Amino acid sequence: MLSLVHLPLRFVTYGVMYVSQRPTSMKRLLSALLRPFTLGHEYSKLWGGQTLSALTDKITSMVLSILVLQRTGSATKASVGLLLEMIPALVLGPVAGVILDRVERKRVLVFSDLARTLAGLTMAYAFYAGHFGLFHVYGWMTLNGIIKAFYDAATNAVIPMVVERESIQAANAVHTLGKNTAMILGPALGGVALSRLGGTWTLAVGAVAFSAAAGCMWFIRPVFEDRAGPSAMRPGLSEALEGFRFYKTVPLAMHLLILTVMVNLCTMPSGLAFQYHVLNVLKKDSDVLGFAFSVAAVASSITSYFIAARGRMKRLGSTLALGIAALALSFVGIGVSRQVWQVFAAFALFGGSTPFIQVPISTLYQEITPPEIRGRVFALRFTVSTFLSPVSTPLVGIGLDAMGSTAVLLVLAAVLGAVSVGALARGTVREA
Image 1 (cartoon, rainbow, N blue to C red):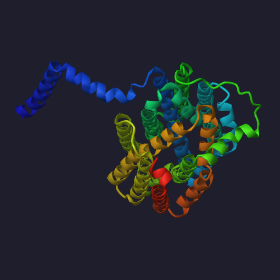
Image 2: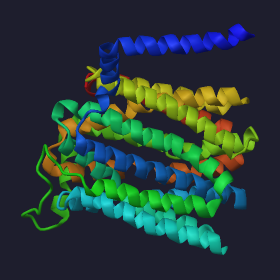
Image 3: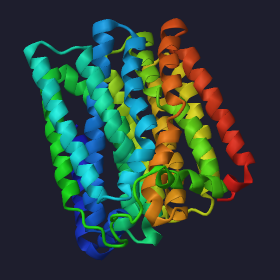
Image 4: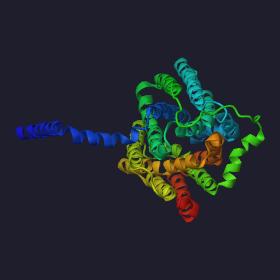
């Protein structure tokens, strides 16, 4: 027994001695591990602010979704909130693009998070006072949808303004690391926070986090491209249509847009299906659901770091198609799972596949889009890419109530598989 105690202690002691005797080697190792994150102070501010904002957004959305499911037991009513979050992007996308090309884009990020701060505090007070209901959930989703019509496009337009062109792919990978970790870890923290802290404190802390994200964005100073400035043109339909003309004249942009539409068609309502499967089929509580998302977060972080450290990939289009195929397999795994370990394995595949989709799409868009129309092009991209989501989201909610999560997830996986094959068959995408 004594040797079992001494053995680990000796191992640690020898390890410390080895590191202390080779400071240069360890310094090189540490430098290599941190290289993908050394993209400049301005990018660090952007990354910190958008990651905190995205994390808080996903925590809040998870909490509200669970509250609706717990209080109503209806996936259809929960899907209504997701639908309300998507509609504003469809209506405001072209207008948002024109505005983003005329104003300082970082101000859009700041004011967006301040608006969510006020909305979060309002919901926290309503929960504390006992007046919280579907009205507050749907109101938050609508406001968040309006904000996202501007926020996501603004973030993608700012990235080339704070990093060198040679570092755009690495910046997108690190950006995706933060965004995907927030997207997958946020629901995990939301489920745990709701069960441990309750609705009032969870929503209140989220509001404070949004204000901190706004503070990070305020200090960004673009250094590699001119800031957006006032245009000589009067705002009008012709200016808004510049984004459409770009997609019409650049085949790769159009093909990427179609792929994004189909992927979002399946992935945007998938979170509801995942929740339904774990809570209603496996009969597990929100803590297990949260841990499953944590597993996916780790896989997503590892994949994103690998892409950032590897440098420019030669075939971004082929990487994109294979990422979609892996995503389809993760949907199958979750849908057929009946044990917790199976869910965790499928969630790991889900998290690991998403960076191989998002990084190639963002990098290709930023490289082929002229700086002066990035606001319009990116806003239009986010608008059109969610065009079918308001149809798929309520259908998924109804399908979950009627057929169950297994059937719904298998159908979504089949669509994603077909999209992957189509991407590989299209030479414009495959060779990008």
